[in-house]
Image 1 (cartoon, rainbow, N blue to C red):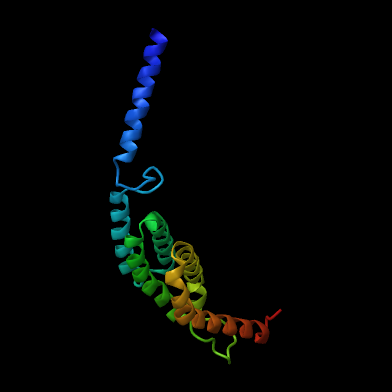
Image 2: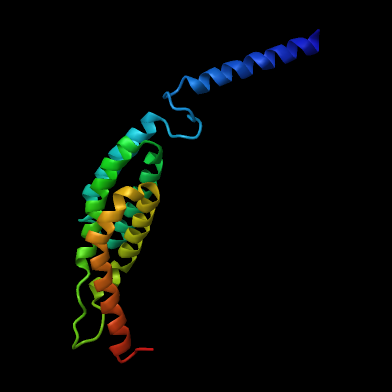
Length: 169
Protein backbone atom coordinates (compact mmCIF):
# COMPACT_ATOMS: atom_id res chain seq x y z
CA UNK A 1 0.00 0.00 0.00
CA UNK A 2 0.96 3.64 0.30
CA UNK A 3 3.06 3.13 3.46
CA UNK A 4 4.80 0.14 1.90
CA UNK A 5 5.67 2.21 -1.20
CA UNK A 6 7.13 4.98 0.96
CA UNK A 7 9.21 2.47 2.93
CA UNK A 8 10.45 0.92 -0.31
CA UNK A 9 11.39 4.34 -1.69
CA UNK A 10 13.32 5.17 1.50
CA UNK A 11 15.13 1.84 1.33
CA UNK A 12 16.11 2.52 -2.31
CA UNK A 13 17.38 6.00 -1.40
CA UNK A 14 19.41 4.58 1.48
CA UNK A 15 20.93 1.93 -0.79
CA UNK A 16 21.81 4.52 -3.43
CA UNK A 17 23.26 6.83 -0.76
CA UNK A 18 25.44 4.01 0.61
CA UNK A 19 26.65 3.15 -2.89
CA UNK A 20 27.66 6.78 -3.47
CA UNK A 21 29.61 6.80 -0.21
CA UNK A 22 31.58 3.69 -1.19
CA UNK A 23 32.28 4.83 -4.77
CA UNK A 24 34.59 7.69 -3.63
CA UNK A 25 38.38 7.64 -3.30
CA UNK A 26 38.51 3.96 -2.44
CA UNK A 27 39.07 4.72 1.24
CA UNK A 28 36.85 3.07 3.84
CA UNK A 29 35.78 6.26 5.61
CA UNK A 30 35.32 8.74 2.76
CA UNK A 31 32.79 10.76 4.69
CA UNK A 32 35.41 11.38 7.40
CA UNK A 33 38.40 12.03 5.12
CA UNK A 34 38.97 15.01 2.87
CA UNK A 35 38.64 14.15 -0.78
CA UNK A 36 41.64 13.95 -3.07
CA UNK A 37 40.96 17.35 -4.66
CA UNK A 38 40.90 19.03 -1.24
CA UNK A 39 44.14 17.33 -0.25
CA UNK A 40 45.82 18.31 -3.51
CA UNK A 41 44.74 21.94 -3.17
CA UNK A 42 45.89 22.01 0.47
CA UNK A 43 49.27 20.62 -0.55
CA UNK A 44 49.74 23.31 -3.22
CA UNK A 45 48.65 26.08 -0.86
CA UNK A 46 51.06 24.91 1.85
CA UNK A 47 53.96 24.92 -0.60
CA UNK A 48 53.10 28.46 -1.75
CA UNK A 49 52.71 29.68 1.82
CA UNK A 50 56.17 28.37 2.71
CA UNK A 51 57.63 30.53 -0.07
CA UNK A 52 56.09 33.69 1.38
CA UNK A 53 56.88 32.88 4.99
CA UNK A 54 60.41 34.25 5.25
CA UNK A 55 59.86 37.57 3.51
CA UNK A 56 56.58 38.53 5.17
CA UNK A 57 56.09 40.87 8.13
CA UNK A 58 55.69 39.18 11.51
CA UNK A 59 51.92 39.58 11.82
CA UNK A 60 51.48 37.98 8.39
CA UNK A 61 53.95 35.21 9.25
CA UNK A 62 51.72 34.26 12.18
CA UNK A 63 48.74 33.89 9.87
CA UNK A 64 50.78 31.95 7.30
CA UNK A 65 52.04 29.52 9.94
CA UNK A 66 48.52 29.04 11.29
CA UNK A 67 47.25 28.38 7.75
CA UNK A 68 50.02 25.84 7.18
CA UNK A 69 49.02 24.05 10.37
CA UNK A 70 45.39 23.90 9.20
CA UNK A 71 46.51 22.56 5.82
CA UNK A 72 48.53 19.82 7.49
CA UNK A 73 45.41 18.83 9.38
CA UNK A 74 43.58 18.38 6.05
CA UNK A 75 46.35 16.04 4.85
CA UNK A 76 46.34 13.96 8.03
CA UNK A 77 44.64 10.90 6.49
CA UNK A 78 47.03 10.51 3.57
CA UNK A 79 50.53 9.76 4.80
CA UNK A 80 51.94 9.68 1.25
CA UNK A 81 51.05 13.36 0.85
CA UNK A 82 51.58 14.38 4.46
CA UNK A 83 55.18 13.29 5.08
CA UNK A 84 56.85 15.13 2.14
CA UNK A 85 54.89 18.28 2.98
CA UNK A 86 55.84 18.01 6.66
CA UNK A 87 59.51 17.65 5.65
CA UNK A 88 59.23 20.84 3.58
CA UNK A 89 57.33 22.73 6.27
CA UNK A 90 59.82 21.59 8.92
CA UNK A 91 62.68 23.39 7.13
CA UNK A 92 60.73 26.63 7.13
CA UNK A 93 59.59 26.27 10.74
CA UNK A 94 63.16 25.63 11.92
CA UNK A 95 64.38 28.66 9.97
CA UNK A 96 62.08 30.86 12.06
CA UNK A 97 64.20 30.09 15.12
CA UNK A 98 67.42 31.41 13.54
CA UNK A 99 66.34 34.94 14.42
CA UNK A 100 66.61 34.20 18.11
CA UNK A 101 69.94 35.58 19.23
CA UNK A 102 71.51 35.96 22.62
CA UNK A 103 70.58 39.05 24.54
CA UNK A 104 73.28 41.66 24.93
CA UNK A 105 74.54 41.09 28.48
CA UNK A 106 75.40 44.77 28.95
CA UNK A 107 71.91 46.03 28.13
CA UNK A 108 69.98 43.17 29.74
CA UNK A 109 66.98 43.64 27.54
CA UNK A 110 65.35 42.00 24.58
CA UNK A 111 65.78 43.67 21.24
CA UNK A 112 62.76 45.07 19.44
CA UNK A 113 63.25 42.40 16.78
CA UNK A 114 62.99 39.65 19.39
CA UNK A 115 59.90 41.17 20.94
CA UNK A 116 58.30 41.45 17.53
CA UNK A 117 59.12 37.84 16.67
CA UNK A 118 57.67 36.32 19.85
CA UNK A 119 54.20 35.66 18.31
CA UNK A 120 55.89 34.02 15.30
CA UNK A 121 57.88 31.71 17.58
CA UNK A 122 54.70 30.87 19.48
CA UNK A 123 52.90 29.97 16.22
CA UNK A 124 55.88 27.89 15.11
CA UNK A 125 55.80 25.95 18.38
CA UNK A 126 52.07 25.40 17.92
CA UNK A 127 52.73 24.00 14.44
CA UNK A 128 55.47 21.75 15.82
CA UNK A 129 52.88 20.42 18.26
CA UNK A 130 50.51 19.78 15.33
CA UNK A 131 53.29 17.92 13.49
CA UNK A 132 53.97 15.85 16.64
CA UNK A 133 50.35 14.76 16.68
CA UNK A 134 50.20 13.99 12.96
CA UNK A 135 53.48 12.13 12.48
CA UNK A 136 55.37 11.41 15.70
CA UNK A 137 57.89 9.14 13.97
CA UNK A 138 58.99 11.96 11.69
CA UNK A 139 59.40 14.50 14.43
CA UNK A 140 61.17 12.58 17.21
CA UNK A 141 64.73 12.60 15.84
CA UNK A 142 64.44 15.98 14.15
CA UNK A 143 63.09 17.67 17.25
CA UNK A 144 65.94 16.52 19.49
CA UNK A 145 68.60 17.18 16.86
CA UNK A 146 67.42 20.44 15.27
CA UNK A 147 64.91 22.27 17.45
CA UNK A 148 65.65 21.31 21.05
CA UNK A 149 69.15 22.91 21.14
CA UNK A 150 67.64 26.18 19.88
CA UNK A 151 64.87 26.06 22.46
CA UNK A 152 67.34 25.34 25.28
CA UNK A 153 69.42 28.34 24.20
CA UNK A 154 66.29 30.50 24.05
CA UNK A 155 65.06 29.40 27.47
CA UNK A 156 68.49 29.77 29.09
CA UNK A 157 68.98 33.22 27.65
CA UNK A 158 65.53 34.43 28.65
CA UNK A 159 65.68 32.98 32.17
CA UNK A 160 69.11 34.56 32.70
CA UNK A 161 67.72 37.83 31.44
CA UNK A 162 64.78 37.54 33.78
CA UNK A 163 66.97 37.12 36.85
CA UNK A 164 69.68 39.64 35.93
CA UNK A 165 67.72 42.57 34.57
CA UNK A 166 66.83 45.58 36.66
CA UNK A 167 63.15 44.63 36.34
CA UNK A 168 63.57 41.02 37.39
CA UNK A 169 61.08 39.35 39.67
